Amino acid sequence: MKKRMTRAEVPIEQTWDLSDLFATEEEWEAALEQLQKEVHKVTQYKGRLGEGAQVLLACLDAEEELRQRMVRVSTYAYLRSSEDGTNPKNQANSSKVAAVMAEISAALSFIDSEILALPEGTLEEYLEREAGLETYRKNLTELLETRPHQLSPETEEVLAALGEVFEAPFTIYSRSKASDMQFEPIQNEAGEELPVSFALYETTYEQSSNTDERRKAFASFTKTLNQYKNTFAATYATEVKKQVVMARQRKYESVTHMLLQEQHVTLEMYNNILDIIGTELAPHMRRLAKLRKRVLGLEQMFFCDLKAPLDPEYEPTVTFEDASKMILEALEVMGPEYMEVMERALTGRWVDYSDNIGKRTGAFCSSPYGVHPYILMTWSGKMRSAFTLAHELGHAGHFAMAGRYQRLHNTRPSRYFIEAPSTMNEMLLAQSILAKTTDSRKRRSVILQLLGTYYHNFVTHLLEGELQRRVYAHAEAGKPITANVLSELKGEILSTFWGDAVEIDEGARLTWMRQPHYYMGLYPYTYAAGLTASTAVSQMIQEEGKPAAERWLEVLKAGGTKKPLELMKMAGVDMSSPEPIRKAVAYVGSLVDELEKSF
Picture 1 (spheres, rainbow, N blue to C red):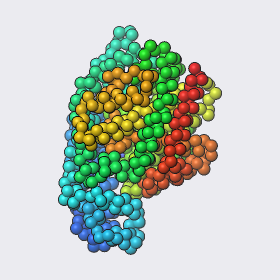
Picture 2 (picture 1 turned 180 degrees about the horizontal axis):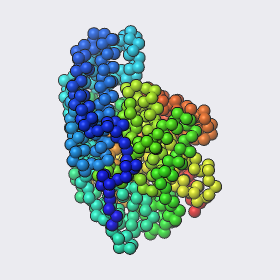
Picture 3 (picture 1 turned 90 degrees about the horizontal axis):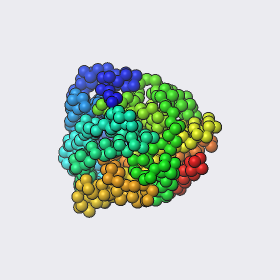
């Protein structure tokens, strides 16, 4: 049986270099301690924001400087915990930093409370009188929009102090996945034992061309998930209850209204994504499932077969170096400034792609302001990993550009937009490979990767979004959230979407246990929103070339200075209309058409 490496055994070139954040752990500890000592640089303005525009500006500037250092300190602890959640020191440091951040957030909570308590028209007067406040205009205006939902300053301070407690559901979920869950090994056809882990299942076994191996791994995976289902359900139910209580206390119509306000998204835009894709994409995905069943000669099509390779004999190994070269070639249209960031990311150890015990599953990009982004993923040696790398580099390029042109408070756009730059890079990678090959089999392989991206965003995450919609309605009606309820809801959603094309078994119903996004507000559906926009813009780049790419670069540089609809309109896409959604779904249908013809 191949032994999984410990973190200490991983080759250094496969890991990120956190010394760009802090040279040593001692330096990090000193920075954490110093943060607590310097909170007074902001709190000295407590009770004084009504004195005038200059006082408000001084307070906001001091807060931003402190928050920039908070980001750096908390990112270091988060990345250490992500690379090895089994390490007791990493666990302790995560808890330590969470407590300090909650304490500081509580101390800074007076800022929003005092601004919202200013007499009507005062803030507008400040903005006119003090030019230095102009950079904060969007943030201050959006803060005023929350005035009807603000609680008393004392209550807001208490809530901020409970930040670590409020994050507990996500912490428990993440730590259980990384540290506690153990999976039974499986035997291959030669009688050899193969290890199973969360990361190995999702990056390797789920995409295995060997049906026996794939299904055995799913059985092992499901068996362990089943052992944790009640614990995970209680954890998620706590997260849901937290959101329901907060929405009611803040007098929102629903949790959905509360979470959409912070995204600056209308209820109609939210429902359009879930309803149109959920309904109109299903027939195309059912065709794809039936094609897979026929080509692979399966008697039954199970949920665990949905990612089985359709052309298993054509599955070339892709190294990290090969993928890097392909991605750089694909992104040349973005111009030299963007390319300089991509090259540094791929050669400067911004990417952690090893597989080791205790490493967080999935992939993410963390972008501490003033340093550079960091990417975590697990390399599978297959083309899917190349697309995942391109995706995370899209996030890295976005925040590297935003950080270069905007101050900290203006770098992050709405979550509704956040997955557009990442999926854009996947689209450009696919376009580049397709343009360079006349090999019909290679073309088919790239179409399958594109469909993998649409599956991830338009199916996996979209159906997560649908589950969230139902779970919050369930909870707001006073109904309990249990493991059985979550499995039943997930089963209903999957059965409706897949119809008779896929057998929805108990393991499929446990899919609600697999993703961390349920603990991140209304995040899942935004993957589909971002991919809808990037589908449209990538087609513009394909048709127009440099002018469309330059428009997109300006959008990235804008960071969070505009609302999501405005950002997408800058790029030429109107997401207030259902049309881009329908066009994206139709494009997926055309990919399935071409795939069917190729077989």
